[in-house]
Length: 362
Image (cartoon, rainbow, N blue to C red; front, top):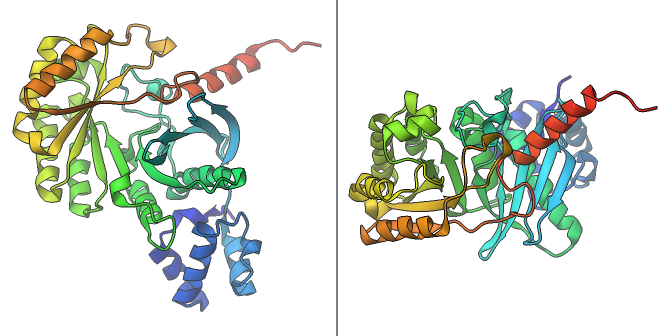
């Protein structure tokens, strides 16, 4: 039997699954408590759950689909995990220590098909979506690591900004959100969760209709179609004429602020005229929008791009401010390790391929 991850079930799904086997809702509550409050690592540790139920779960589900493959720790406390999945695929998860708590960045796909020309995540094409359980388990693996350290630390914030396009794995991503938000479990507040998308307009509308009450970030990175298409091929399918109305729908439906992510690339999208264009694009939405300027982490395979000069960043920031646009600069984490999203995975896959091609040494 190909067992699925127990972490892939929402509480309602777990309850519905147990009912036909004669187990009432309180049994699901017990199991949920063991998984997310006591955070056991095996079904056999659920010692106040009916033994028949424990065996039933063990027969049909698995608790560990991720194996720690590489772990990098930065001087600033950032930890980057490279996990190996059951099919030997590799994914990245990152723990960041913020002033407001511990934030984990999760991956939603093995590889990425969005193809942003500056991004390490898209160096290797998408091979499959992650299951909801594989996404939840990233949080659990990090939390188990924190539990092992014995400092009483807990994951308090989550960003869905790792490898892959979350809205291209919509159903599993939504189930993941329902699991981590559940008040009886990890209880991570919706206001502490941010989902990022490169701009799949129909899914932004569907996301608004779901009323999940989590934060939304849009990876914009250019203020006009010509430039955005040049660096983000997703703009061919969803140009600004489609993306901006979807954003407006979300703003009206949710009345929640969104973040506009903007990676600054030297002499590509960081000029004064770009800042003015971006300010004009955001002007009618400025009460519910914050532009987050992001420093670029160079990637060997994308050597045509460089980090913007400090004076260009300051000028860009000042122009947006003067135009009345809310703007911030993202703090950097893990710059002394493989900082760019997908970079560690890409390096490991490249290294494995080189090792296979290298002649054996006797």
